Image 1 (cartoon, rainbow, N blue to C red):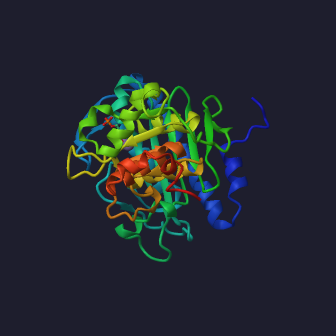
Image 2 (tube, rainbow, N blue to C red):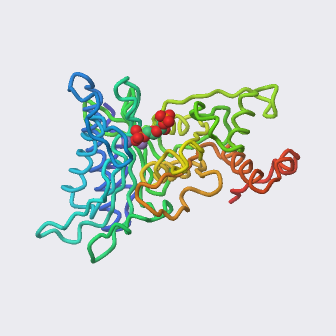
Image 3 (spheres, rainbow, N blue to C red):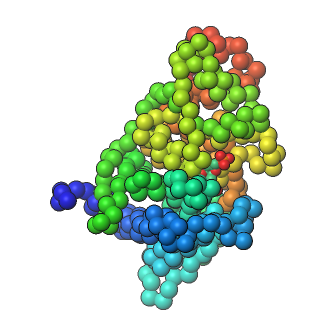
Length: 358
Ligand code: AHG
Ligand code: MN
Ligand code: MN
């Protein structure tokens, strides 16, 4: 063990120096890391701990709950409730928000609201493929009880966001608005160690991730983008593309943070009541913050995810994120489609225009 290593706690103490408020945020992130360690321990034991398989219950999304969905949810709820720093939470697994009253003697401790997906990619649990947890921290109202509307803050207002990936190694990747940083769990010692400082997503890529079994339901701009990638060297992109789909958003996004790429769960017409598969508040928003803080982009196709004003805690949105140049291109395809100027896009002049110039 190298004693000069930067642990998560040391890193947060160094990054969050702005008084009580930031000190509490650092403490909350350390609490989250503790919950992640507990979930990592359960997932890695797998069948030995009897944690695989489904329950009889369904969640608010109508999805059958896996045992690990519920155990992970419980790990996070306990952490937030007992940690004394969060005034309330929203979880994928619970229909309604939970609100915590301060316990007797607790002074002004509950400044935050936590929003999370306790176990992402749960269809992968029983086949021993990577899963994750996703979290978002926003500010709680001051001096009054939390109301359900208090959770409906746009992603741009997140104070911190991140995910844990339970893969060959367990990693915690997070942002407090000063870049995106990755920590690897040293299981023997029980510490998260800073291993990936200031992650930067390559702006260009030749790799895309989308569930192509939904191709017939996609809108024309997404169909066009994927067809052009698939056409490879002899198509309009003049190079070959590669494709990956893990079906754990966390794992797909992690790969993109590590080596670039574009991830899409776009709007489709499969179920008209759902404008997308992924949930805004605990999947799209935290991932969008982490991706933007690493130099990437995250959009619905038509707007920046972090600018969406949420209307409901379990709201779904289309998600297109990753390497800047590709996401920008997909945004232009949507714009060209919406304005009926598809042909114009093919001119070399239009090629250089970005919708997301700083
Ligand atoms: P969850 O397990 O929290 O419900 O989320 C699963 C999500 C996401 O992780 C993944 O990208 C997507 O669902 C996979 O969807 P398909 O099964 O349609 O590929
Ligand atoms: Mn999920
Ligand atoms: Mn989940």
